[in-house]
Length: 130
Image (cartoon, rainbow, N blue to C red; front, side, top):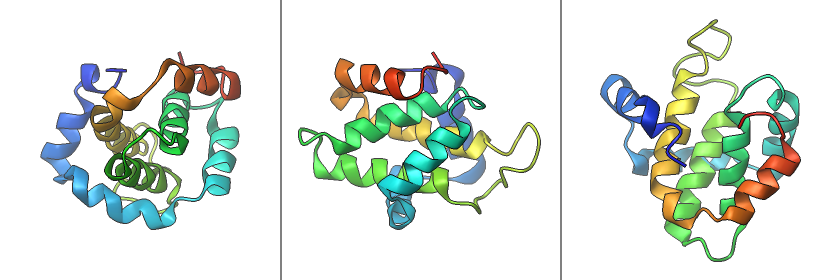
């Protein structure tokens, strides 16, 4: 659960780009279940962090997750599927750094609401990325 925080990505992102968790919410308008699942199946075997994003997706769908956490999760997942972001995903080696950092912030906020069942569902959907 502390995958991103242990790598310092959330702090790097905050320092370099200035993203605050509440600003992530605005990207929720780009989130849709079908768009996210298409992204996850397309990149799930190519990018190790996709399974972690799927954990957030299942947390988002859980009725026990508070609405404010769901708003941040929808924003983070919306940012992930957004084709244009702060660091373009096509830049080799750097393109996914901002996406991973946003997911790290979302993980930090959602950590207490992530259940073992979310992790198990994510492993079934995307077995790569442990």
